[in-house]
Length: 261
Image 1 (cartoon, helix red, strand yellow):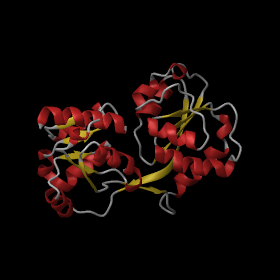
Image 2: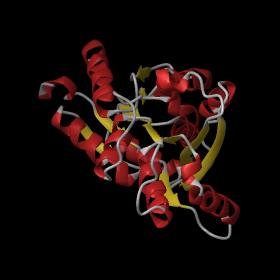
Image 3: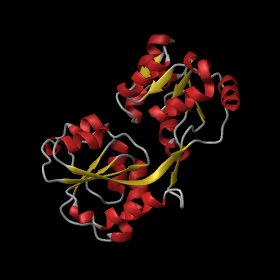
Image 4: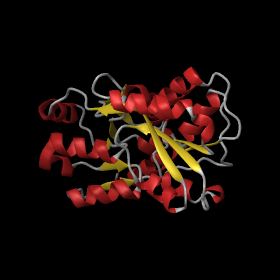
């Protein structure tokens, strides 16, 4: 992508601090000015607040060899989930088909020498559910590795196809300590003209912090589902990427820049 493609964009990147570097670097290489301000943090589960979830995860992971399919929702699920799995299974159990949502998730698994069953990574729950191997799941046990309080859509669809579905919840999302006034000042100081919001939860947080002013900003969103949430909230300038990956996000921004600047 030519540097001039995004040279008029000043993008606020709101991803968690340890997940923003690649995207921010790609934006900079494409000519955009980049400001980092996480609106979501990822942290491990803590006691005693999440003792029940921690104990449940331990019990399920000790029985990992009883599952036929293992699905990792995100890079964070790989990081925190595999750390836990390796405590009980230093040698990976045989016969489990491993699936990933997102190219970055698949890459994170590959870095840990875990082979992903898909020929190409699914970029969201909907595309994963289109996989041939997940159409008929009668008598199958599926384990989903995710954070606390994720979407129920994937599990519900798998269950409707006959699967018994369990969750291992191995991290939680929290909101950084930033107020609406601080965020507003940051946006004005850097003359931000696009806000990149990586999830529905991040979108909601931005809206809550900024109030009606939020609706004045063009927002880069990772899916049609999140774009629908934004429309319901009253956003008028929506830049919808095909998925949350860097390549899709840059393509959506390039198209926006070409048509609006």
